[in-house]
Image: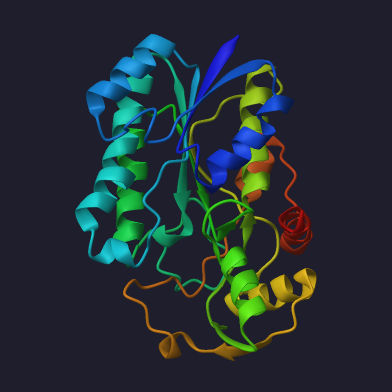
Length: 290
């Protein structure tokens, strides 16, 4: 039975993969977070992979505190740039295929049409730069890897915009939310399903493993304001959400004003179905209410 190593297993995406693992019983899963495996320790990573011999490594570990990264640049680079390189190096040595998760923050957001994998990257934050350099470092060490860029990730686990809006919406009468940053929310469960589907289809010879960069988010487009309104509507929360401009809500890290991702490549090559963002949001809120 082939093994799949999942790093960052306590985060949003890792937890989503953990919840789906029982549906993929042809694999043995190795779920690790900092307690089980310190990814910043190159020797520990090498020893773990050499001992366990996973066929696949799904790297869900990341430094995602976008604003704090502006002050903690070294830590962001260690986790987002050096760790993917370590995983790529040891994966290449032991024939383990790496799937690494990246971000829409590799773009500056000046486009007005959905970004393809071939579009020019130009990150404007420490976080975005550290993630882009992680992609480059991984593919240099292990050209057989997959990089999946995603956007606006949320789930019932961890800290995210959905849970913040539910909490604040229940506590306050009014909220101010940015309306001029446009992208697509991504339900972590959907991304987890796609990653496991790609591995399963590859193993069952239903598709070829084609390395490189891919984009994945849910279908459709919205602003953070639209997202907040939809969350409150579906959660049955009556709170007045007031739209504001980015300049009215300054943050240490620059956000891409437009970061819609074109998903045609991942759909074409791996034959995946992608749900509409509101449909997935409804599912997540139903889970959250349980």
